[in-house]
Image (cartoon, rainbow, N blue to C red; front, side, top):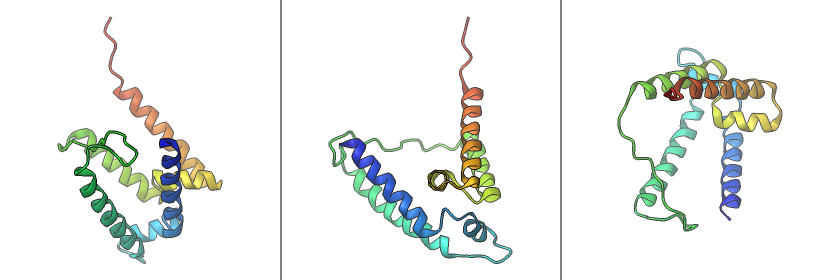
Length: 140
């Protein structure tokens, strides 16, 4: 049952990305181009997403289990460290250069777009590189 609801949630998320234009790199780059022909429409999409997420988190904080009966596992980290800052900068630079972030990249891969496939491959490479760098050194 959990897998079915996970699939449905992912499907709704992907459709939302498609309908909002978040899978269109040109639209995203237009939003990020503050000095040029700025397109503020994605700011409204983000504001709507933040409002929905805020309401969902407020509700979730009051519960011990999910509606499916699974334990409620909410993020607990509150500190800002070097890894978070560097990761955020890399994410922002990648988003600004490509106009794609991980969620829309998955939608573009399924849609068969070349740019999405290239971004997805680079994303996997970056995650693998992170795992390789962060892998604990085995003690002899």
